[in-house]
Image (cartoon, rainbow, N blue to C red; front, top):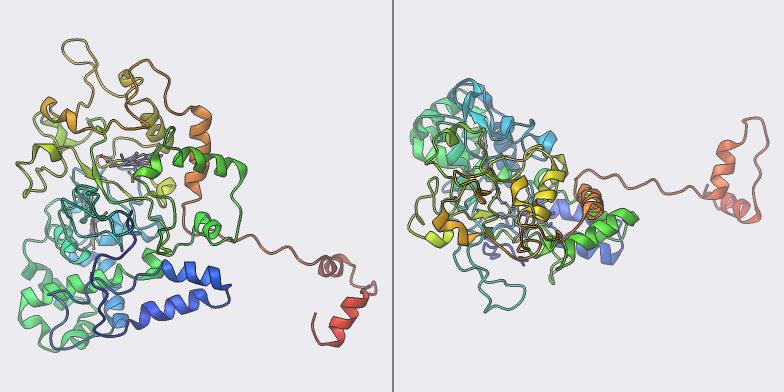
Amino acid sequence: MLSKPPFSTGSLRPVPALLTLSLLLVAGCSDKVAGLQAATQVKDPAYQNAAYAPDGKHPSIAELSALGRQLFFDRSLSGSGQLACASCHSPAHAYGPPNDLDVGLGAIGGQTEGGRAVPSLRYLQNVPPFSEHFHDSDGDDSADAGPTGGRTWDGRASSAHEQARIPLLAPNEMGNRSPADVVAKLKRAPYAAEFRRAFGDDVFANSNRAFAKALMALEVFQETPSEFYPYSSKYDAYLRGQVKLSRREVRGLAVFNDPNKGNCASCHISTVSSEGAFPAFSDFGHIALGVPRNRRLSVNVDPSYNDLGLCGPLRTDLRDRQEYCGLFRTPSLRNVATRHSFFHNGVFHSLREVLEFYAERDTSPQRWYPHGADGKVAKFDDLPARYQQNVNREAPFGRPSGDKPAFNARDIDDMLAFLKTLNDGYQLPAKPRPRLAKRWVTAPADTPRTCSRSCEQRQQNGRP
Ligand code: HEC
Ligand code: HEC
């Protein structure tokens, strides 16, 4: 389980934006709630001690974040002039895709298809840099959780900073030819003057440096708590003791956590860490689930193409590691009920179907996979046979074909209800008005107000 931000907590300078926000959030709550609230905040911005931290001029976090926001929404930064980061990572959709396409569409006129589903950018602030041997700081240090962390579905970018290079330069995303290409656009942008103010008048003189600054501004924007980790779901309110879950939601959570039923929480962590950090609903581990090949994708028209995650072809440093083929980073399930495409290749379009896949992948494989030339079900059809042993077979998987699934249709309904409690933007129910106040409100305007003794007393004291 993850609890600590992976980066150093040694501070070079104070973090005013984050501090003010956590103070605002905790104001007016009970001590226990305040403690839990504070625990949901990130201590330092990731770039704090990084090699690419600002040289020369030191803009404030507020300046960087405001600049990063403009970059994030700027369509002119794409080769086609039509795509901004926000076109794929829409703020109205938890910074996930605004549509039900299987995968992201980019480049010229938004026509070139990528091979992967667009992830939400929320709750990534504690994703550790990629490591093959992850040791949990929360529990037994000697336990090796295996490959964990990194940005993107295969963890190939070590930070949001490094990550932003990918879409800006990828031909199937924003399609710029080079950093200099991006910087030429920055110079013409309406916020060019702000960019100079933040980083110095000569910032555009060296395009590699200017490009690095742009990436940093994007990264800092992506660490804005209110936008990227608001912790404003019903489940968060429940963890803070502010609201109860419905009976159906409680049952769904129990199936989700039960090691013999959903066993979901073994990868999609659901509990507050020992240090009080709220769960991201992912341990960010890399796992092969053997999801069906998405035959609608243009990359998959070539039968010899397989997206093998950790072992390539998009990621190249672990190409020779057979045991890593088919592994993808476990996504957070926060806001998952707002998505319309699921898994790294966007093969499913309904959350119910995803849960049915978990229940029946092994018990009814014929429902999920096509038949091979030999007439048998070609299970794990997106993985060459030699890699199929990498597929996870722990609960809820691992039951023989024809057996009863680990959870049933009612469990699925309950889990669907529970998963909706992970959507941000939950409004706490209005506090029931005191009975007296209600009587006042409902009394016709011309009837004299009735007031009890204690009410009269309060009125004398100047309170309602
Ligand atoms: C054409 C659609 C598209 C655009 C435009 C786009 N992205 Fe993405 N983004 C994706 C896809 C698809 C992935 C998953 C890539 C992968 O796994 O290889 C992704 C992954 C990411 C991730 C990693 C998330 C994680 O879970 O680790 C970050 C961060 C990110 N994008 C930020 C940005 C930023 C910043 C921009 C603008 C500079 C941007 N994206 C533009 C489609 C897009
Ligand atoms: C062994 C670890 C593991 C377990 C157990 C597990 N998951 Fe997952 N989950 C993953 C991984 C890894 C992915 C991404 C797989 C891929 O795309 O290839 C994923 C993807 C998902 C997605 C798609 C999210 C998205 O953004 O596309 C949902 C929904 C989901 N899991 C729900 C569940 C539920 C519900 C359970 C319990 C029934 C569960 N998971 C159990 C590891 C796990």
